Length: 180
Image (cartoon, rainbow, N blue to C red; front, side, top):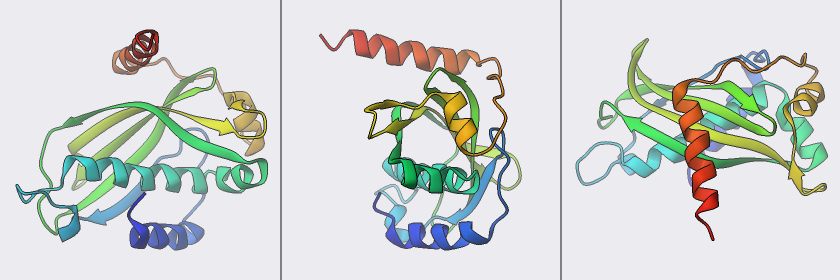
């Protein structure tokens, strides 16, 4: 995470923003493309999206009530795999909104979708990520029922995973098999 001023701003603002309903609340955070976000083509550089996505996931975690639990229990949010699709470039000083949501889960693996929106619904970038909450004390990932219980939410079954989410899980599993 190398976006310290944006991080500080997000932490302060998250304290005053409404709580999100777990597990299907949607985090929406507004940003503007800054000069240090640009590459030589004068649009937001590909790597910066991943940094901005960190902030969206943090907002979701904090506003669902998982932040305090994670600190107390020594849990750490971890990204295991991701895929991204770029549709439209983001130009200097352009405003955009980052949406972050859970779209499903299998055991300890949580699939998140993050979208960069221009205006209300024009998608500039879309990413799917395989994430999880790692319990540093137990040295294992936290399963979804335990995570949901820890934030006072009902144990809701996962929605059916999209073909893209299934493909991401399959690609992640294939990469693990190729490790040798």
